[in-house]
Length: 187
Image (cartoon, rainbow, N blue to C red):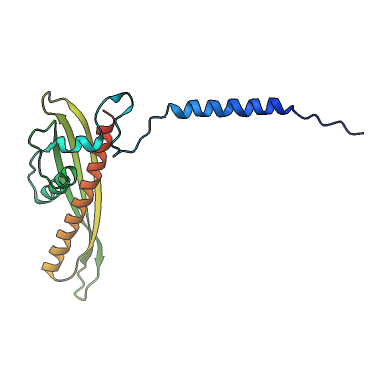
């Protein structure tokens, strides 16, 4: 003898599904995620867009060649090639360091090993402050590495190292732009 199966009434099942859908829509409506480079103003009309805040950043001068490369790329990316702003709202202080390591040693016929590959590790710390008040708005650190081959000719090895520095500076500037954009979007 088998027991009869009991089925839930169709109205009860529809009611449960409907209440789950309403709860999911209520949760999703509270979501404030928006694209980083969106032109839409934040909910409530507060603040400016990230894209509009980029041209309001003045980047302070730096001392080394590779730091200047990072700064130049960052100025170009933030301002669309227009240079530094005349009346900046924010000031960006960059600190860029570089470590060059020769990671692969190749044996030579003289019995002396010579480096045949290297890696440039470039690190930048940044501090974004408001111009009028000096209040620190954001700070952070970003790091990028760039590998290169070291040929036997000395000039070619120096040129390969310089190209790796330039590549690391360009990529580090892109990371900094993204980090600064994320910091500005939180304001």
